[in-house]
Length: 411
Image (cartoon, rainbow, N blue to C red):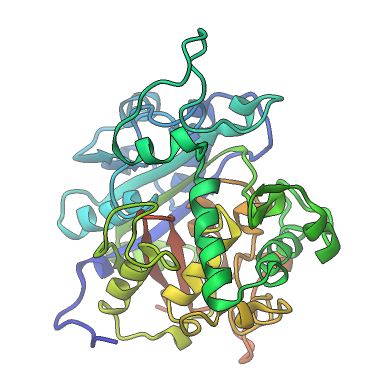
């Protein structure tokens, strides 16, 4: 591991001063702007701010991109609805995972372009799905003309029926089974751990008990991924306020310090032609993050790792150095290591598999909840009797990856 760079990383000038979430549900039937306003106002109030204090705005992905219910409202819509006067604003889908919006906000604060940046991620995929199945990418022509033509990487997947990230990520799972001996029982521990934690989260989508037999009996989606290996579409919005660190003393709760970020993509930017089909871009983002801090994996008290599909969390566990290459199956076997009282408490609000697909931002929110000691029945308590002081958060899969190391401000 490379030593920490000389001088302080710029992201350390920023803290997460406020967090907020809207109502979260399977099919709420509320507009994305309505949910966003609820989360945004909650985050601002949590930070002790009025709308006049907010001078920055950031989101992922913006501009109505993706399948129905995916994008959330644009920054102009949110600015207008909240009556904000901005010195800096940003949105976009290309970058270091969904948390690119938070990372961009931290750098804007560090550069003095804004003092308090409201960052939000909103989904209404549950309502958009309706009573039907989850939509693939591409679909039919709708008028009897067949499947439309696609360029880029999609031309090598859609014609062969690989119309979802479930298909692309399943190849990673298959390769890990072939190369490392990963078993379905080991993979299932990610889903079972999430369900146990979701039972203690009143906002979770799925909280009913689930056994290994339940998991193994679920219908297969794309081998080796079954239904419970796939996240749960829902409606909801998560917002955070990223502020300059000098506001920490004014808060009525601990500030969450952004210690280091990882944004690197050093391999081929491809879902199916990455140089190592067992790892993906998580490898590069994680390496870059550790290069920017004096902390090491053993310092992490809780990990909130992207689990859009269960195997992604396994990839992140290895990429972040919590176990060796190919050792994650043995590491999570039995579930003890990743339980709330284990060596690496994982996805303590249920993750996206049971807590709901808030597209990575629910993980950021939960990291802050844990660092602030506000987890209630699901609060992690370390062997020294204290709550977590260091949290690792990761977003993304395939060629899309970003990660942050967050610490509890002890001032």
